[in-house]
Length: 172
Image 1 (cartoon, rainbow, N blue to C red):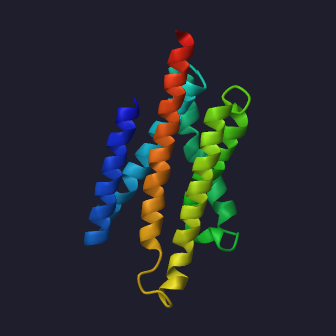
Image 2: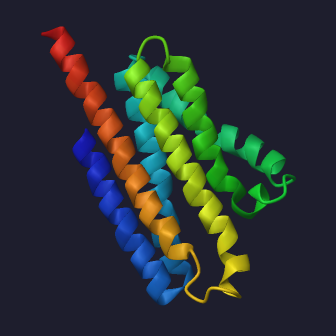
Image 3: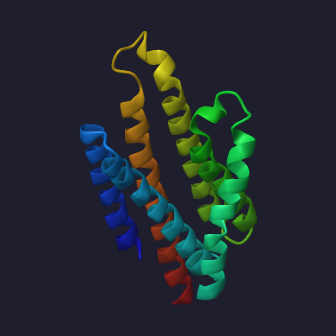
């Protein structure tokens, strides 16, 4: 299943390239949709494989991301600095919630989620500073947002892979 996440990560890169080279509505869709697909696929795999929920419970819980995000975004829009990238903040918050939830049963995986949340938090912060910094630093920080996102997503794939390898080893 990690292979699927790697393919989606590659599609995210293509979509981002298209948006940053064409800046059209279709390119924006090509940029945003793969990110949503990655989030939902990752959540599903975590719910199913790591938390061990039946596939249908994992699916329902995964679809719960939509009302979760819809509920959190309006709250985040009222927080200075966070409002700039309010949707993106839903992900590191959720990673921390999952880390707390799975901490006792899967401490290594939970630690990986915390690291992922921190990486993404730094990345989102860099993205949020970009517009203000561009006046003083013409290249801005947007490139660092993309680099850190790639590192973070690759890290989260690695966290999933490590968990699955360890789970297989424990089963014998």
